[in-house]
Length: 476
Image (cartoon, rainbow, N blue to C red; front, side, top):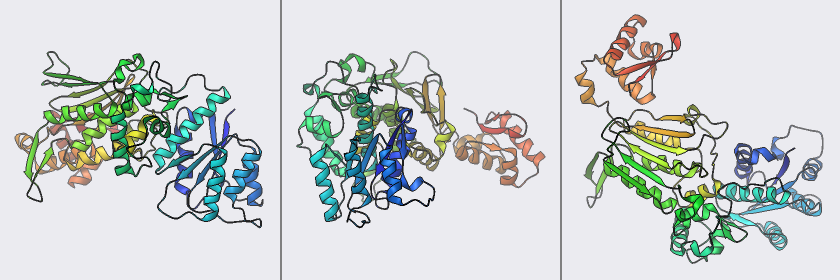
């Protein structure tokens, strides 16, 4: 049996937020086990009165989620909108209510302001600015519901209290710096002078007054000093060979907070990459371009740290080779996502929502499912081969290939113009079939076959698959 969630809120104004909650619940590995979501806009046309439909849906629900913005909504003969009617009905039925108020620049209508005031007198409500912090609040509220109902005996790792940790183990300076950044970057509601406990509570990082694992990982003075977080670190290794081989020329282990781990790991990689310096546009500074775009390196490392399985004893590993950058993180892709699916538009399904939300607020991540697409686009623009995504056992591995296929390398292989065009196409798209090459080069299938076989013999490309489905990819 699943619990039903009823989402209330002005449909036109809060369309994106309503849909985002439903998508989040149905994609999150924990929430989808216990919850279904009712959205009025998803039901088929019916001859029943709308108010009868939504009130019956409220009655059949176990959790009410109210989204309050600026608009009040259409009013019935009694002067009540569906939003207020639904809130009152859920209240009368003693249905657990989660209310989220959107911070907006616009002016609230008087009746909506009055409804918000009514809700604030009855229960603790949360404010949100963007969808990522809304879904994090929803997640925390649903986890609390499952705990209260006795369905959830083991809490998600990021929400569970960190054994032995207290507020004194949280860095006031770290929280203050985060709040200042979040307010600047994402218009976060709290300012840098907000007390630590209030800030953590607002971020849903406290469990019965104690810091959660997420709180300690993000803002702890010494996060790895607590046993469950001992391997919450990033290992960075630099090799001069194409495989892992000792001795390792450069090896660093970064601990501290997750924000610091990202910054230090990114700096490690960038310090080893080739780079070019050009005069800045203003003439007062220089622009540095790295062979792998800095934003792609950062996104790869942030993804690994944000989505890793923190119950694993393994660490995130960042390994730089002469031909590639590999980022390993413990854990598997969420159900419904595949390595190939990461190359297309896909939902954001965070493994650790309470970690991902602060990373979003500090502008380390976007939480929109665009990270892998952004990396692919950045590498394509930089003229790099396409990325690889692989599940290797219980490790997810992202590979960014360095530009070994340079103009000089192509010139040394004595290729014809058609073959050079094929090599460039493969580099940009990840592979080419014989049929695609026939169209690209405007030649016969036999000539295409001979050209491609010659590239294989020159160890530039490798065939993948069999028969008519064979594709040729860059040799790696």
